[in-house]
Length: 224
Image (cartoon, rainbow, N blue to C red; front, side):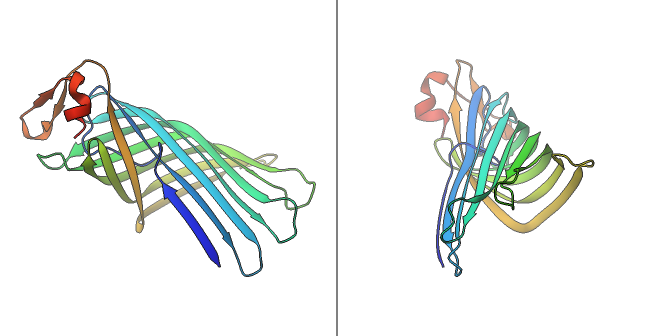
């Protein structure tokens, strides 16, 4: 089986800078593309993108919005149409960041998110009506971030708490799920901090001494 997976970070979920800086904008997320063909000649394709953007109100708190779209598709050899599952979501998040060392290289963060999610699947019967499901989601994720270079950070999380409540179109009752996972998997992300405005911000606030930088010099100093 030939398998090609491209994983690259663009704008989207579960990421944080190693030093949340006041009056700045945080952009984060992930992008994934995969394709394969199994031994029965069935083709598989998947794509997902999860962007997010937030405003860092001070050196610890960030509020913002996030979204996501993903599709998983398969097609048998000789078939003309793909079977698919499309997933999408949009919501808001809040994040608390705490620097762990005086050089602002390592940080801990916890992110809470809540929003709307939905799914559309192709019918198992040719020409049949699509399957539709929608509801709400919530999650809590703790993670560690490592400041790499000029506002870029690598972010590592080892699981979290997920909640969802969804209902299929035409169904009488909704389904509820609660999933707590720690240590079963690891996720890696990248984030970028963009400074904005003319206000001054602080670096190294956890140790009582503040190093001030002017917003006019953000590109040269503040993102390091």
